[in-house]
Picture (cartoon, rainbow, N blue to C red):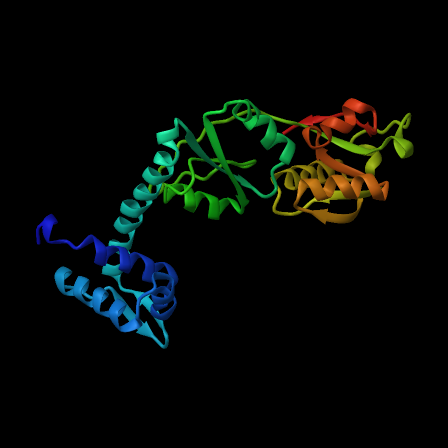
Amino acid sequence: MRLEQLNFHHLFYFWRVAGTGHLTRAAEELHLSQSALSSQIRQLEERLGEALFDREGRRLKLTDTGQLVLAYAENIFGLSQEMLGRLQGRSEGMTRLRVGSVATLSRNYQENWIRPLLADPTVVLTLESGLLEGLLQRLVQHQLDVVLANEAVPADPDRPLHCRFLGSRAISLVGPAREWKGRKLRIPDDLDGFELALPGPRHALRGQFDALCLAAGVKPRWRAEVDDMAMLRLIARDSGWLTVLPEVVVQDELRNGGWWWSAARRS
């Protein structure tokens, strides 16, 4: 089979069906009848000479050949999406930048990173957040241009990514100034039994803090676990508990004197 014999329209339909795992759902999204879509997939299988799907009840499961074809289809149509994203607005002299960030990353940190772009009238930003694995998948599929994360990305030869260390952040115990101003604590020695609000177990900072307390033999009493840094900031403000936070999350409050803070560590 030669390249000019490959029907990319059929390949696109296969890509969409493989993405949903369901012929009926894909047909609805593509505004086609189920029989028409099934016929397109069958024609692709005939051209390739191998089956792409096995049926399991109402769902479709990719065969080994289907998995191989899907990997190439992801690259083909992922690059097509990247091209369209980059070209969008070019006629008006605009550049589109699609940025993904992990949900546990501080919003202040994200804004600090993109602030120079906010002043550039030629840049159009698309910002979205989610779990790291999902964002990396969208990056591989060329649906995002860059991903901001607060943890290292494991090396994977099947998913070549360019990773760059952007910098470290100071980590502090913070609390409202009305509750904590003027008080002194030794960190972590004096935290035994203290009521704390902490980042959730998925946050890289949480593991570091737990290890610090374990090494010192102290057991704080945690009252809340919160993944979202903005929500953790609000809980710290309204509960009166000490909270483990990157300083950047409360940068405005620290600047205005509204928060007490303890000795910081780098993370």
